[in-house]
Image 1 (tube, rainbow, N blue to C red):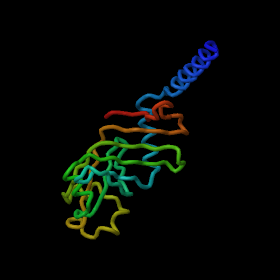
Image 2 (cartoon, rainbow, N blue to C red; image 1 turned 180 degrees about the horizontal axis):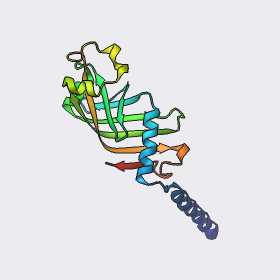
Image 3 (cartoon, helix red, strand yellow; image 1 turned 90 degrees about the vertical axis):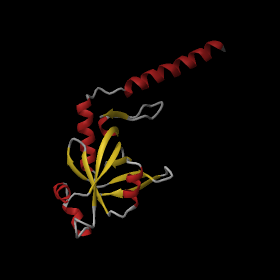
Image 4 (cartoon, rainbow, N blue to C red; image 1 turned 60 degrees about the vertical axis):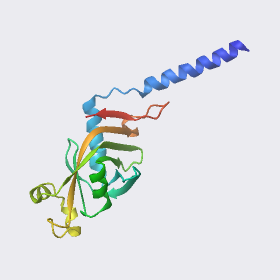
Length: 173
């Protein structure tokens, strides 16, 4: 009986070691960033999460302007919106991007900065936003995302979560 139990435990441990070693990817940081950019650029929207005054997360779907592949991302909103008051109170945010395949995602954790200067609004403006904001001086405010870390899972690229903890591959900026 002891021998069977010992063999069973040994098989479980061996399976865990094989699973963990298959989790480790042979991707460089640059490869992972390139794959993350691909997922972000293929997403037509993102979920923007802020913290309210009670530290309760609040999420909403937004249309991001992906300004470049260095994770320079801008959002626009009404200056009287809840998200603006949330950012003024606590600027920690999360952005979630989901790939159309439903099996890949990128989460960006960081901080947000509110930008209300007209020249900056014009520089980072996305034409898709124009129908909703008639007066750039008064009707809108930009939100610049300052990424601190990135988490990614991409099944199609074999970037998987840790099989034991489900922790995704993480890049710290």
